[in-house]
Every structure is written in C-alpha cells, then in structure tokens.
Image (cartoon, rainbow, N blue to C red; front, side, top):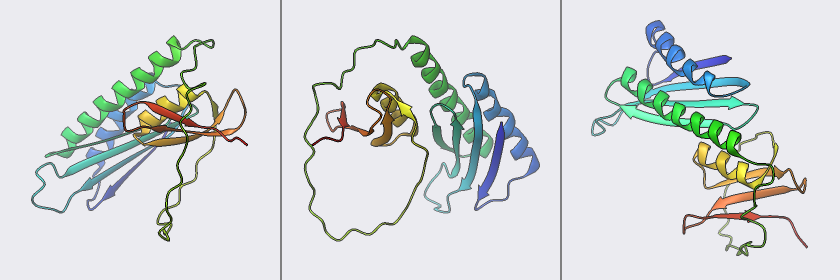
Length: 181
C-alpha cells in the first residue's frame, strides 16, 4: 500500500509520520486491494477553535473510497480518532459487501423522483474533480456516497451500463437519476 503523509500549516516529524502510518495501516486488514492512502495533517490557525489539530485520511481501493476527518487538541489523539472512524467505516463496507446478495431487491426501481430545473444565476466553476467511474449497483453507490460523506454520487450502473447519479434527499432517503427520453 502506498501512503502519502503531508502537512498543512505544520511540519510533519518522523515520529508523527511513523505513528500515522502505523495506525492507519491497521485499516488495511478490513479492505482488499488498497492502492493509495493519503494522510493530511493540519493545524487550524483560529485561536477560538480548541480542537485545532486536524487529520484527514482518504483511502483509495479497487472498491469503495473511504474518507474520514477528525480534530483534537493533540495530533496523536486526532490520528487515533480518525483511525477509529476509518475502522468503523471499513468494517461496515466489508459487512455490507459480504451480506449483499446479487438478487437483492432494488429499492430504487419504480420510485424515481422527478428532477426540477434550477434557475441559473451565472455560476462559476470553482473546483474540478476527476475520478474513475466504476460499474456498481445503486445500493453500492449509496454506500460509497455515505463513505465519502457527499450528498450525491456519480457511477456506472452495472445493470444498465449507463451513467447514473444517486443523491441524498432532505427526508433522509435516497434518489436515483437515470438517463431517459
């Protein structure tokens, strides 16, 4: 597994780097085929924030991407907290993938929500992300969306081989957007 440890507003010491690699490396036992892990440590400059030591970890694998962020008064404590969160997420992924049946009922079929058009106020693109689209079921896409803590997720539907989007609705349920005519 390739680990990248970087610091923002702080210099990462060898002891801190080794501690982070050792702790986050323990998550590997829960996930298969981890390709890369990014650990970013930062210090918030606002003196009103008591937990100003922040650690954000992103784990890239051939399956889902897992991301967690925690803050504490001490960087070692923040690393411990983020590792606990990553282990919970990794166990959840492994359990769901093991328990998942290929013949599971799809909760999205027949319950699509119409998408309303929004007014355009000349928006500006402020950030661009690129990522590989992987074939998966809508249920897997919802799990992936929860793991990266986003409100929507773009994926290739393994059943239809078309690009789809799942999103979190205000009522806590999920919606699925499929291309159609």
